[in-house]
Length: 178
Image (cartoon, rainbow, N blue to C red; front, side, top):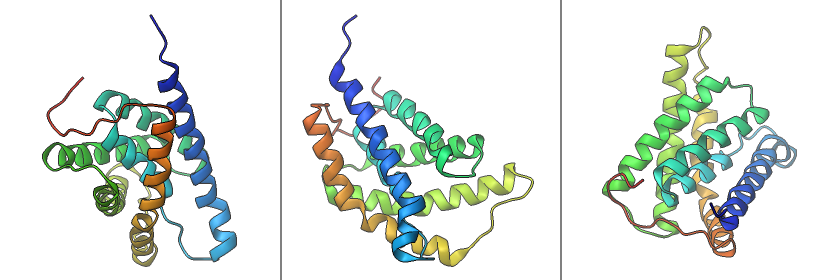
Protein backbone atom coordinates (compact mmCIF):
# COMPACT_ATOMS: atom_id res chain seq x y z
CA UNK A 1 0.00 0.00 0.00
CA UNK A 2 1.45 3.31 -1.08
CA UNK A 3 1.38 6.07 1.52
CA UNK A 4 0.13 9.36 0.15
CA UNK A 5 2.60 11.70 1.80
CA UNK A 6 0.80 14.84 0.67
CA UNK A 7 -2.34 13.82 2.59
CA UNK A 8 -0.29 13.10 5.71
CA UNK A 9 1.55 16.41 5.34
CA UNK A 10 -1.76 18.26 4.89
CA UNK A 11 -3.17 16.53 7.97
CA UNK A 12 -0.15 17.45 10.11
CA UNK A 13 -0.04 21.06 8.88
CA UNK A 14 -3.74 21.44 9.70
CA UNK A 15 -3.05 20.24 13.24
CA UNK A 16 -0.17 22.68 13.57
CA UNK A 17 -2.49 25.48 12.43
CA UNK A 18 -5.13 24.23 14.88
CA UNK A 19 -2.71 24.45 17.79
CA UNK A 20 -1.50 27.85 16.62
CA UNK A 21 -4.98 29.40 16.36
CA UNK A 22 -6.22 27.72 19.55
CA UNK A 23 -3.15 29.00 21.39
CA UNK A 24 -3.68 32.48 20.00
CA UNK A 25 -7.34 32.38 20.95
CA UNK A 26 -6.78 31.19 24.50
CA UNK A 27 -3.71 33.18 25.52
CA UNK A 28 -2.47 35.91 23.20
CA UNK A 29 -5.93 37.32 22.40
CA UNK A 30 -6.45 38.35 26.02
CA UNK A 31 -3.05 40.02 26.12
CA UNK A 32 -4.08 42.23 23.21
CA UNK A 33 -7.77 42.84 23.87
CA UNK A 34 -8.24 42.32 27.61
CA UNK A 35 -11.61 40.90 28.62
CA UNK A 36 -13.13 40.92 25.11
CA UNK A 37 -14.19 37.31 24.36
CA UNK A 38 -12.02 35.69 21.73
CA UNK A 39 -13.41 34.41 18.43
CA UNK A 40 -13.67 30.67 17.91
CA UNK A 41 -10.80 30.47 15.44
CA UNK A 42 -10.58 26.70 15.75
CA UNK A 43 -14.23 26.50 14.67
CA UNK A 44 -13.32 28.15 11.36
CA UNK A 45 -10.79 25.38 10.82
CA UNK A 46 -13.39 22.71 11.64
CA UNK A 47 -15.85 24.27 9.17
CA UNK A 48 -13.18 24.22 6.46
CA UNK A 49 -12.57 20.52 7.06
CA UNK A 50 -16.30 19.78 6.89
CA UNK A 51 -16.77 21.72 3.68
CA UNK A 52 -13.69 20.63 1.74
CA UNK A 53 -13.09 17.03 2.78
CA UNK A 54 -14.93 13.79 2.11
CA UNK A 55 -17.17 12.70 5.01
CA UNK A 56 -15.12 9.93 6.64
CA UNK A 57 -11.75 11.71 6.55
CA UNK A 58 -13.53 14.85 7.80
CA UNK A 59 -15.10 12.98 10.73
CA UNK A 60 -11.77 11.40 11.64
CA UNK A 61 -10.01 14.78 11.43
CA UNK A 62 -12.70 16.50 13.50
CA UNK A 63 -12.52 13.86 16.22
CA UNK A 64 -8.73 14.22 16.33
CA UNK A 65 -9.08 18.01 16.43
CA UNK A 66 -11.55 17.69 19.31
CA UNK A 67 -9.04 15.59 21.21
CA UNK A 68 -6.28 18.17 20.64
CA UNK A 69 -8.59 21.05 21.62
CA UNK A 70 -9.03 19.50 25.07
CA UNK A 71 -5.60 20.84 26.01
CA UNK A 72 -6.94 24.38 25.47
CA UNK A 73 -10.22 24.06 27.37
CA UNK A 74 -11.81 22.60 30.48
CA UNK A 75 -14.57 20.98 28.41
CA UNK A 76 -15.02 17.22 28.86
CA UNK A 77 -14.19 15.01 25.89
CA UNK A 78 -17.75 13.73 25.56
CA UNK A 79 -19.08 17.29 25.28
CA UNK A 80 -16.48 18.23 22.70
CA UNK A 81 -17.06 15.19 20.51
CA UNK A 82 -20.86 15.31 20.76
CA UNK A 83 -20.91 19.02 19.91
CA UNK A 84 -18.57 18.56 16.97
CA UNK A 85 -20.41 15.57 15.49
CA UNK A 86 -23.76 17.36 15.71
CA UNK A 87 -22.16 20.41 14.10
CA UNK A 88 -20.70 18.19 11.38
CA UNK A 89 -24.14 16.71 10.70
CA UNK A 90 -25.74 20.16 10.40
CA UNK A 91 -23.06 21.72 8.20
CA UNK A 92 -22.70 18.64 6.00
CA UNK A 93 -26.49 18.50 5.62
CA UNK A 94 -26.54 22.09 4.39
CA UNK A 95 -23.53 21.46 2.16
CA UNK A 96 -25.24 18.55 0.39
CA UNK A 97 -28.14 20.83 -0.54
CA UNK A 98 -26.50 24.22 -1.13
CA UNK A 99 -22.81 24.63 -1.92
CA UNK A 100 -20.58 26.95 -3.88
CA UNK A 101 -16.85 27.23 -3.67
CA UNK A 102 -15.18 30.30 -2.30
CA UNK A 103 -14.68 32.50 0.71
CA UNK A 104 -18.20 33.97 0.68
CA UNK A 105 -19.88 30.62 1.28
CA UNK A 106 -17.21 29.67 3.79
CA UNK A 107 -17.84 32.88 5.74
CA UNK A 108 -21.59 32.27 5.77
CA UNK A 109 -21.04 28.72 7.03
CA UNK A 110 -18.65 29.99 9.72
CA UNK A 111 -21.33 32.41 10.91
CA UNK A 112 -23.93 29.64 10.91
CA UNK A 113 -21.54 27.31 12.72
CA UNK A 114 -20.74 29.87 15.41
CA UNK A 115 -24.44 30.23 16.23
CA UNK A 116 -25.09 26.49 15.93
CA UNK A 117 -22.08 25.53 18.04
CA UNK A 118 -23.15 27.75 20.93
CA UNK A 119 -26.70 26.40 20.82
CA UNK A 120 -25.53 22.80 20.54
CA UNK A 121 -23.08 23.21 23.39
CA UNK A 122 -25.58 24.97 25.64
CA UNK A 123 -28.38 22.45 25.14
CA UNK A 124 -26.09 19.41 25.23
CA UNK A 125 -24.63 20.71 28.46
CA UNK A 126 -28.11 21.02 29.94
CA UNK A 127 -28.86 17.39 29.05
CA UNK A 128 -25.56 15.67 29.86
CA UNK A 129 -23.77 17.58 32.62
CA UNK A 130 -24.71 17.85 36.28
CA UNK A 131 -23.74 21.52 36.29
CA UNK A 132 -24.78 22.94 32.90
CA UNK A 133 -22.90 25.71 31.12
CA UNK A 134 -23.90 29.25 31.94
CA UNK A 135 -25.75 31.22 29.28
CA UNK A 136 -23.45 34.32 29.18
CA UNK A 137 -25.37 35.99 26.35
CA UNK A 138 -22.98 38.92 25.79
CA UNK A 139 -19.86 36.73 25.58
CA UNK A 140 -21.55 34.32 23.21
CA UNK A 141 -22.87 37.12 20.99
CA UNK A 142 -19.41 38.72 20.77
CA UNK A 143 -17.92 35.35 19.77
CA UNK A 144 -20.68 34.85 17.18
CA UNK A 145 -19.86 38.24 15.64
CA UNK A 146 -16.06 37.87 15.77
CA UNK A 147 -15.76 34.28 14.52
CA UNK A 148 -16.93 34.88 10.92
CA UNK A 149 -14.91 38.11 10.77
CA UNK A 150 -11.76 35.95 10.77
CA UNK A 151 -13.16 33.56 8.15
CA UNK A 152 -11.71 35.27 5.08
CA UNK A 153 -8.06 35.24 6.27
CA UNK A 154 -8.52 31.68 7.54
CA UNK A 155 -9.95 30.59 4.18
CA UNK A 156 -7.04 32.17 2.34
CA UNK A 157 -4.50 30.46 4.63
CA UNK A 158 -6.16 27.05 4.53
CA UNK A 159 -6.65 27.14 0.75
CA UNK A 160 -2.93 27.97 0.39
CA UNK A 161 -2.04 25.01 2.59
CA UNK A 162 -4.22 22.75 0.45
CA UNK A 163 -2.63 24.10 -2.72
CA UNK A 164 0.93 23.68 -1.41
CA UNK A 165 0.31 20.16 -0.12
CA UNK A 166 -1.62 19.40 -3.31
CA UNK A 167 -4.54 17.97 -1.42
CA UNK A 168 -7.61 17.44 -3.57
CA UNK A 169 -10.52 19.54 -2.39
CA UNK A 170 -14.02 18.15 -2.58
CA UNK A 171 -16.03 20.95 -4.20
CA UNK A 172 -19.15 19.12 -5.28
CA UNK A 173 -22.19 18.76 -3.09
CA UNK A 174 -24.12 15.55 -3.22
CA UNK A 175 -24.91 12.40 -1.38
CA UNK A 176 -22.60 10.47 0.86
CA UNK A 177 -19.47 9.64 -1.11
CA UNK A 178 -17.12 7.24 0.64
